[in-house]
Length: 214
Image 1 (cartoon, rainbow, N blue to C red):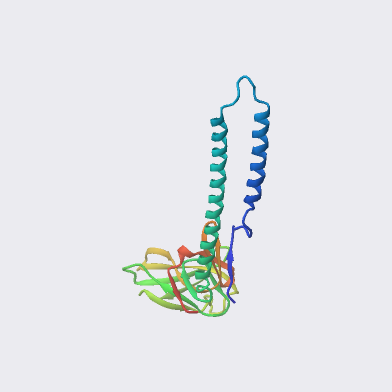
Image 2: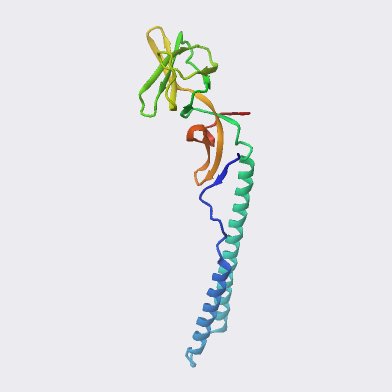
């Protein structure tokens, strides 16, 4: 089921028109009071009244313009969410945590250049090493079955994967592993678009490096 969520937006447009009308009525009352209590020997110049009216009119128009711009921004946001609907159900590739629930996980391995041996290391949510297994030293796709070092299935949960690149006894590098996971929801918030993956894992849309049909 497609799930699209917009965060940080108000469900209703602020009712500024009523506030403007109220403020304008108050302004007229103040202006009338000012005229009634002016010094007869030193009356206020008519141009001052005209200036005050023009100033309030300008403020009123600015408020209306701001409201219109806010409405347009909300409409553009809805258009963006409609485009995100196409993401839901696809598989996104990112270097975030991976959910292991007994189904093989597609990885994208990229061992360091010059490596003669590469090890895939999986750490659980607490950061403990759950398993290590040797993988090809060539870059490319790989299916992780989620077994421990004894060959038994790992407990269901989130794991973070890295690949260690070795040349003999010298470790060249430790790099995060990019994995594919199905997108279950897309959220648009103040910090941009966030994608919710299987297992409740969330990643920013900017962290996704590839999409494919789920």
